[in-house]
Image 1 (tube, rainbow, N blue to C red):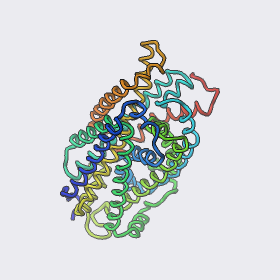
Image 2 (spheres, one colour):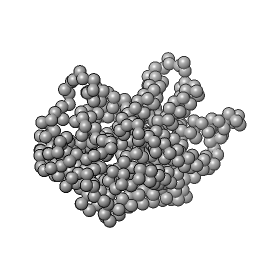
Image 3 (tube, rainbow, N blue to C red):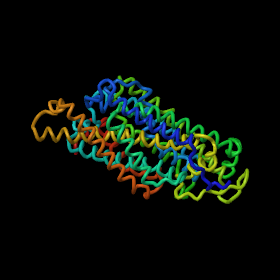
Image 4 (cartoon, rainbow, N blue to C red):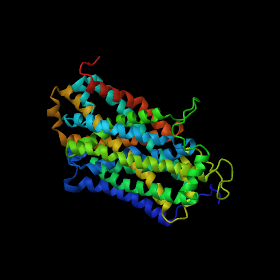
Length: 453
């Protein structure tokens, strides 16, 4: 069968897919009304600071993983080989450093937005500059995460891109708006189960299709795809050991200092639980990266750049972007298995829902604490503490802002897919915005003599 002959969704696929969306939405509805609903900003933005380490670690992992990694990492491995696996070293380094330096700092401050730190340490203008960088990053990142499932559905089922973006964005905005942080965390736990089971299922069945793991590794080794440390002066070389290890360490440290991660630190029951959150997240990230990279190797072993591979005649799919290669493979070669396509597409949607919901909740916290409350203080000449006592009103405002941000993200997602592959887009955005923010935190924490200038 030619690999371009994708298989349409069956009844079981649709049941699996719709069930995932229904459970995610129901989670938001439940937490919107359970125990009286979300009546304070502490409940809405921080889950009342009573969450344990494992669900928060799961939520933190899923919010950063998203469809970008699920589609992008196999595409990178398919195109360039196994080198990206070196990033796991940087992930371990980055999370350990954050767990024992950044977490105690955040837990010791009576704040909701992490960027309030810059008012305490430097000056309010620094706080505004840094929080603006975060808002820019999170809006672009959320829009990018909506691209993944839209690409998948368009490639596998011919569903128009705009329909998928609109549906995903609206569902996510709805349950985040009404359910707050607690809904985000518990929806993330469910979505993590969907993601891990899908990645494993596709890898195992795909490996069998490609002739077994021994054949996959032998074929990739024969074509130089398993070289980790071979240095090449060619500037077109995709990665080097140091760029991956050190770059990923700083990338994850930057990700750990943004508002989304900080809200999970603050939602923890204690500093110890918050530290465990970062340490427990490490095996989640390693699992996803290793499984995704092996999946890319499976794809390379299955598809040859000509027409013949080791088992039978196969054609390289005519994908519009490398991020679609895994989608074509699953649809054309695994689509006949009941529910497997529905599970895989649910995995992509789950990743996007998690990332967008976390980003929305974080963006709202930043706008409320770093813009609205200081502006209200300036207008009324009252103390910020007095103003923040109007919690019921601020909770309503937070829900309105969540809906507005969700609308903006949906609009931006319609054009952002033209900027490159998912991994490239996110790496550029994080590099431009995350680097300066991490630098500012490092300066404040490590150099007491540093001042505003």
